[in-house]
Length: 59
Image (cartoon, rainbow, N blue to C red; front, side, top):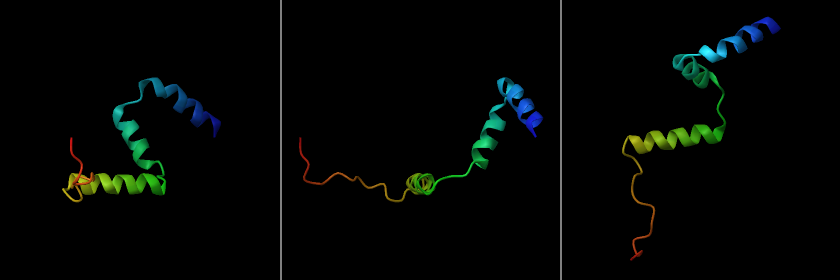
């Protein structure tokens, strides 16, 4: 109930980075966030890292 929320709020100043990571992991993600994470993972794995600028761009 509401006492759980009170205890949680009182704990916030001492919250650990592990607890923050766990909460972030448990939060639902929008389709946009999931797509962005998938694209980041593909990039980190070396897929699709070709430059997106046109080849005829000269300085």
